[in-house]
Every structure is written in C-alpha cells, then in structure tokens.
Image 1: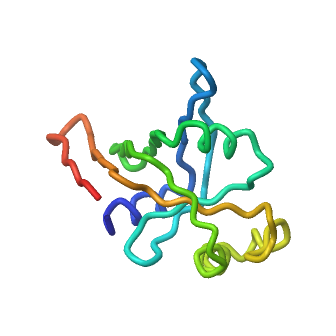
Image 2: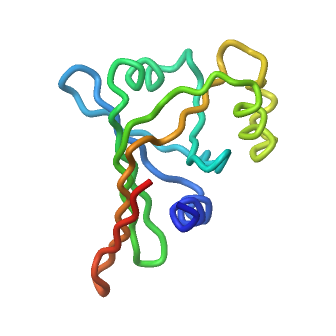
Length: 130
C-alpha cells in the first residue's frame, strides 16, 4: 500500500471514477493519505461525488506518471472521525480554508477490498491488494 500511496502522492492528480445510475462519472482528485494502515481520499459531502459514493461505494481511480500508470479498484468507506479528517487536512493545509475536521461537510473515505495494478508498456503488470 505504501507504493500505491507514494505513486499517487507523486502524481499530484489522479482521476476518480464513480457511477450515477448507469452513467460513469470521472473527475480529478489530488488528496491521498495513509492513516491507521488505510489509504484515504477526501472530498466534501455537499458534492455530487459524495452522493455517488454513498449510493455505490465501488470506485476506480487512475493515475499516470513517468510512463507508468496505476489503477486502484475498490470500495470507499466513509470515516466520520475527527482524527481521520484532521490527519488528512494536516497533510493538505491549503484545504483548511475550505474544510475543517469538525464541520459537517468534510468527508474522508478509505479503500476497502482494494486491488491496485501498476502497468506500463515495458514491464509486466504488478498487483497489490489491501
């Protein structure tokens, strides 16, 4: 999982796919955190992406850097604990002007039953499960 975290952190931007009914939705994300042995992302509960995840937690993200790409498929689970939110916001201080660990909008979610696949055109795929 550390390798997945480092790849996403180094990319800066990755793309998260959700579903809304039968319509796929993809958007850029930039937050990733390791907390208590789990890989977390962050959004706002007021956003459509949050509603999509709550309706169907199965997501996939994709990132590309240095001729390699990473896909992570799994289920996102909301963690409403202040400690989890604070840890994420401490990792991204610029978000503190929009979010707070104590507000009702900040949402952090961790991956459950995740399968991460590192790929490139020159090496065989490598899979990590967490």
